[in-house]
Amino acid sequence: MSFYSLKSKITATFMVSILLLLILSYISFELQVENRKTDIITQERDIVRYIYQYFFQTKNMDISFLQSQNIKLITDKKSTIDIINLFSQKEREMGYSTISYQQRRFIFVKINQFVFIFENMNKPKFPISIIIIFISGLIFLLSLYFMIINSLKPLTTLKNKIHTFSQGNLDINCKSDKKDEIAQVANEFHHAVQKIKELKHSRQLLLRAIMHELKTPIAKGKLVTEMTTNQKHKDRLNSIFNRLNLLIDEFAKIEMITSKNFDTNLKDYKMTDIIDASIDMLMLEYPHNHIKINISNDYIIKADFELLPLAIKNLLDNAIKYSSTKSITLLIDNKIEIENVGLALDEPLENYYTPFRTKSHGLGLGLYIVKNILDIHKLKLEYNYQKETNKFIIITKS
Image (tube, rainbow, N blue to C red; front, side):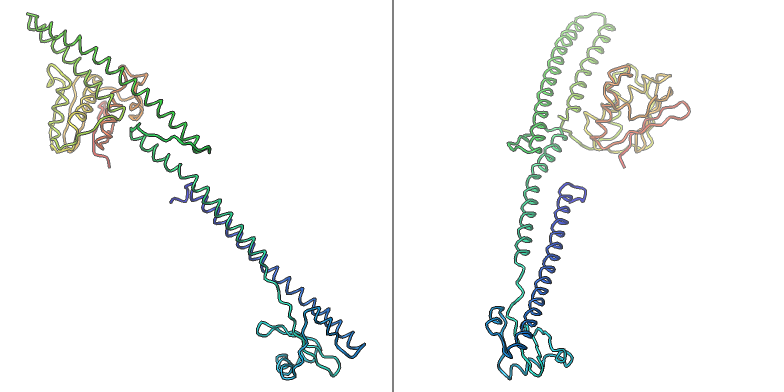
């Protein structure tokens, strides 16, 4: 449990509160005990003062008064001698002294040649009220603590639901029938998830409908192409329709990637096979005129054969498009380096990961798609510019 968590802060606050309650109760307890002892000492002095005055006047002890004050006169000689011996010589000479022995309190009084020993039967009352207040306060604080901690449990559930939502799973239910603020947040989040789920479903239906409607004229176009007698026109039309068909399939993949609705199928492939698939997706008439491949060290990579070639294809397409020579160099050496001669990027590479960039000449999805696919494969894209040469490098994340 992190110290910075809300639960830790609440726990620390209540621990400090309980400690302060304990300290205050202890101080109050000691003060009350001390006050009770002071009261007994004051009472004993008043009683002894009265005994002196009464004995000087009557030469007797007022037994009824002593009984009313809960003071007992020790009459047994042996007990009297034993108790007198408990007092020091100095205390006996003082004429009046007190001593506590074996949880009994004795009073030594000497009047002229007469010596009297009294036992004070009054005991300091145990401050039970302080104990009751302490226990009541402790029970209240603990009850309040567990009540607050229990009310925070839905927050943990909500956090787990939000984490599930962040993974692309919209099939969550975090509705709450409670009335506190956490329940209100949970209900609002639930409404937001349902709204997003509806929008996502509507978008999927729209995209599927558009792609389905586009597939029909493409199929008809390809059928008409087969009726064309001019082979050159026939090949060109077939290339156009195949290109359109491939773009629709790519849009379908893009939709699945961006909506986190894609199950990756990772297997081991040679990087040269991935590159060949990427170049095929470009559908260039003469790819060797545009792409020069240098293989220093081919290597095996765990990849989805539908996704990774699509990412590299987008990088190759952009590199060719923005090259001043309309040609690029591709190096395979335990990493992929794509180089082209042209102008440097206007902004940092990270800015191009935003979809539908307004400054883009196209839809602004190229590097956004690349970033998402590389993240799935735990690969990293780096960029540098030297001597009028752009270099995009795909490496394994450190």
